[in-house]
Image 1 (cartoon, rainbow over the protein chains, first blue to last red):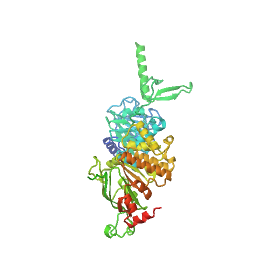
Image 2: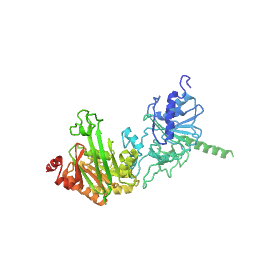
Image 3: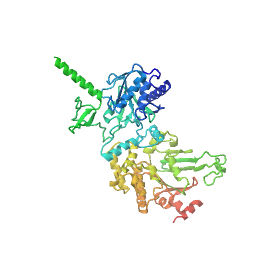
Image 4: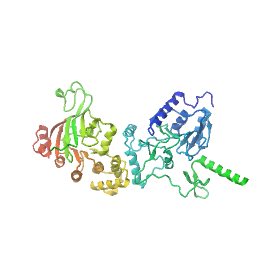
Length: 288
Length: 279
């Protein structure tokens, strides 16, 4: 840790402001609280919202995990981890269970979160109505007046065009029977994990200067029409070619040598944990 | 036994500008038409009162700038009024001045009780969404969450307004002005609101389409008993549609009564001029 640097990079006034916005966000689930997004040493749109939340929350005894689309080792995740560690000296981990703060881009880990944990999601576009209405002034009014026909209309248009709702990620959700919220571009597969979550989920959009939250045990429903129910991505019949997991979100890859399609766990730490466990079992059996 | 009006408008006032000591006192105000030359305030609606009865079509005529559209925009909550009261005869809103309820409630009234056809389709339609989607938007706003049902209603309405069904997934932006106007009418009718506002619906349509639209409006009035307020500067349209008519000039209602009576025996000099100017 650099002794000349302030703990957790941000000054105390900034952290206080971000925490205050987070508290308001927790008090009004799904409501986008504006905050003064700071200049960070990474570019806006690269996770500055999540990073500011993490830095405002982190304490010396915290254990941090950062994932980028399920991966612990991607450049973005590693740079964020380095920055946080160089300014706080906190312990880093790749194990989901061991972490107290998990900052994530576009995934919720496969292992269920606990009430001791906080999940921080990076959000590029916090406004679910933006495609329907360009003006912030107007979307604020629509939220205030509980007028969400625009979001429904977008889903309706997708059904008209493609015969089904075609949101691959960022499928809008209805939080606590009041606000429609963009869950950040997590796959639809992760949407059900938001509902009645044990952990606090905070979402930060640095470029758009918004913080919002899903507190533990909040009702979160994915929007769906009566005759077109919400579905998650379907991986039936497929499994991870490394660890054999079936009930997880899989990446579709093409094996360059054989040209065949293979599937692999998107959550790398989950995959490695399973592989280690399998190996341990094999060793135990061999010992006997 | 008197019928109860479905919509009552009392002393509606709308001004643009704050007014000054030369114009605030209506009795001795020195206005040029409805404009105060001292402070630049425009008195768009002055003390407009009227009732609309169930199943009735009320016409509003007047020259450009006489405040017809402003009345509509005020009733539809597009513009804030300066003063006035509006009452809707409806179990949910009985005795409530609609102009003072919360914006959430206003939105509810707009979505569930009102339908609006704007003079300019750009205001009433989302030009880059499909036509069927535009109709569905109104239905969704009124609480419908069934795609199949909404699609069926939308198709029926598009057929009624003579839009070929193979174009229903096209955006109204690609349509001609007349077709856009008809999509807008279909949208306003989709959830069969008890009150419909029609602002210059036939302006800019060619004559055959104009006739079809007027037929359609007559038909829905007869079949669905929807009350309508029709704003037009075209007396022929008013004669065809309206049971009763208000004549507006410079923001004021100068004459009102049965349409036939106004057209055959106009009392006010402006109305006389208007009627005798009719080709």
